[in-house]
Amino acid sequence: MFRRLLDAPYVLLTLVPLLWAGNIVLGRHVAGQVPPVALAWFRWTLAFLILLPFAWRYLRQDWPVIRRNMGVLTLLSLSGITLYNTLYYWALQTSPALNGLLMASVAPLLIAAWAFVLLGERLSLGQSAGILLSLVGVLVILCRGDLSVLTGIAFHTGDIWFFVAMVLYAFYSALLAKRPAMSRLGFLAFSLGWGAALLTPAFVWERIAGPPLHFNALTLASFAYVSVFASVLAYLFFNRGVEIVGPNRAAPFFHLLPVFGSALAILLLGEAPHLYHAVGYALVLAGVAAATFFGRRRRAVTPARSS
Image 1: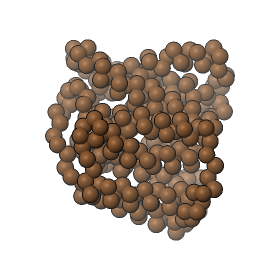
Image 2: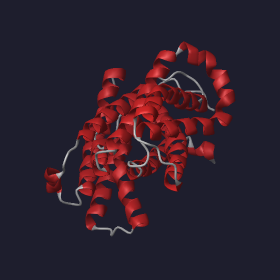
Image 3: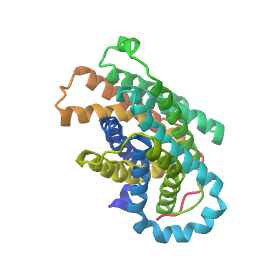
């Protein structure tokens, strides 16, 4: 059943923002108890250790490929693992999650820009229309049906780091098309492990000079969620989805983040549903569908070996 799931790219790309919505909420919730670099380092280190028993034989098989392609693999680990999430957690120390969701809404446009620069891919008319339509839906949800709310949003220094983080992740998303031909588990395990290793000097510095790290039930549960669900599963699903359909057709699924975030708030936190939720959901889903099914089919790339 899991293998069949890995061959259903649009299901995978739908699950990713659901898993990441929880990551954003948790990152903001534990901002006063877990410093940003520590949260990112524990996330990637634990994710690597969890995945390692399943990926060890693939890492050994892929080692010659890894050695020949250390340049592009380091860029992928540095942008998509080491820097992106650390900057996002750092931004959540001073900026509300709403600002983070607003910045995440520009991800499809940033991915399209990087896909053009790195791959020469252009957005089709259907993709452009779908991204814009879903962006309107995102704004309807985040502004609670009143777009004038945008003029009253207070921007913080952390918002700059949100934007830089999204630029880096957009770069990672486009560069995935150039990943070497290696197993999915081998690629993910190496990315997580190497990304955590590159982050270790900053983690050591933060432990020496930074704020204290509080271990309690909340932080341990947060480590468990971000390492298993927001890291191992979400990255496996996202990488596989981009591998099959390409970065431009995967990009609009970022707009499902506020959809799932608000839906979780309704289901788990008792927030009352409103008409603007339904309108925003409909616009986002229509936009994602348009960008997905009316987008130009991408040129073929060499597929990675199955794990």
